[in-house]
Length: 376
Image 1 (cartoon, helix red, strand yellow):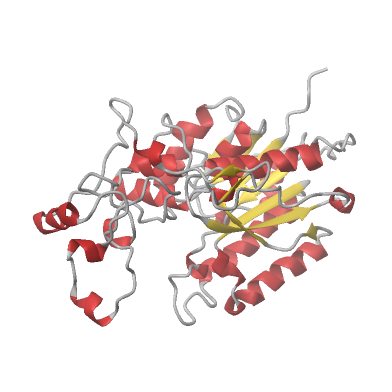
Image 2 (cartoon, helix red, strand yellow; image 1 turned 90 degrees about the vertical axis):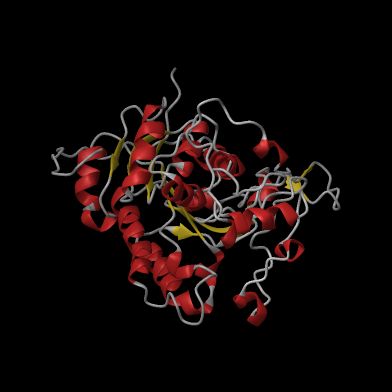
């Protein structure tokens, strides 16, 4: 007997890091929503070409433009959704936002749009990803509302967890919040969540765990003709500063580059610093190819890291091509869920909940309706 193919939907899909992780875990993607045109193009030219997504569709308008109930009728009249993925845009919750920035930010209501799809599609499991800042006191109203809506819909939502990608084999220090919701309360019985980490600091020497993965392999030679093997161009003054910066971890102070803002504020010491390849890389942000935004200078060469190097740090395969040029592609890479971290979490969900339960309920059949939407 052919085994059941589990079905996932990806909201705020970006370039497709979560979707790729789901496909690697044996899921098929039914549809995704992403309104950034460059990210949607990347998704279409990569994810939709993979087995497990050949019948999928990406809708490229704002999630607020779509009626979840209509999409359910269009896409799920004869099947059910097993897993709903997505990370609502996190700008309103970022640690880089100061004071009360982000409070009542209109973008933050997108969390609730995410839950509108939970209520409509009734996935067996949903997994939401966001930055740790979402847990700050200033944003508690949104989190409380999210949990309230979950309870009203009959979902059991587990407490938010903060995971560091390097603890799961990703060559990067990257902390993110994950919130898991279960439609069937019995699925929580005996559930271990989150999955046990697989890697740890080499100094800890924990039993059955591997040491953190360093990022040295991310700087190997790129494939010939790789359009993502590009980096920012730098002026003569910056090139000289990079030349003065020691290899493999040197910092701004080592280069002697001191700007006016540095005299008044000595923070941000990592900017213009080199990545240390013997360690997990720093967090790949949306500006990860810009050395003025963090420790994003190549370990030994005198320029910022390339798109391909950043993508490798995010554990994307080399045949995954990002569209839209240098800045747009860097944004997609920085916004993505690291593929390997996503794979570990989704595989655990599959084995601990979906495969473990042998009872698969058939969805109620309804008449399919045709929607007037653009599917790129």
